[in-house]
Image 1 (tube, rainbow over the protein chains, first blue to last red):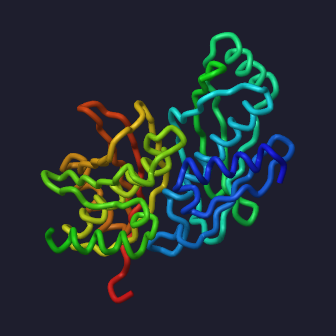
Image 2: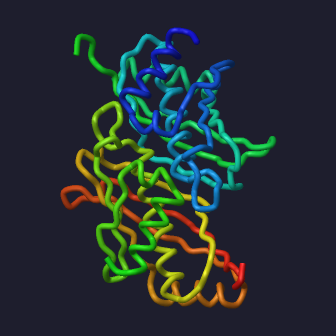
Length: 153
Length: 153
């Protein structure tokens, strides 16, 4: 695993203890898409399928982590918080699951980076999903707010 | 704690292990409103405030648990799953938190119970929130689907 991804997973595990508890790992990061994985294991619900709270947490972290990588690649130090999200649980998830979140189109990304450099603050809307047997089982949309951390703080 | 609430917390803890991990307890159930509590403890994020995934999980469980109590009171055995939800993180949560979910108005409730008895299936929309210092810090809306479990299964 490359440097930034190693740093990302370390930060998630140490700074957000629940990500460790649910068994979060980085599956891959390629072509602008980040995939985080979680074993079904202790993330089950009363029906033996994946608990909605764990699915939501994994998708929320996939979006957060992708923004973290975007900032890293742009050389910007920033704080990232989720503002709001909507989630649709289409099918019960019955196996270990992966949440995939892809970068928005280059123009949107450029606009966000521009706002960060100019105003020190920007919003970004991201879609993420969990697939099972080729179908979208859980669809997620989240909006994140990024604020530049002044150098030296 | 009365019988149904004791049964509810036992079921949550044994059937949804993450509810135990986040430290979920039932704070109170009165006037048709259920309040679940969670210590900030291990539910922190990189900023030392409550992790969005834990906030969402607690609100999701508050809605699920209220539906469970509604069914219990109506003498209906049913399976409950969340279909979709939307959440707005208005303020960072910096202390132990409580998610409160109240029953919908009697007419809506009656309609749901009627649909369950007649068709064996119903949907219910619930609002839930986490307050901090008198203000809504996190607002949640979830839709749950209930299916009657035939007796003897």
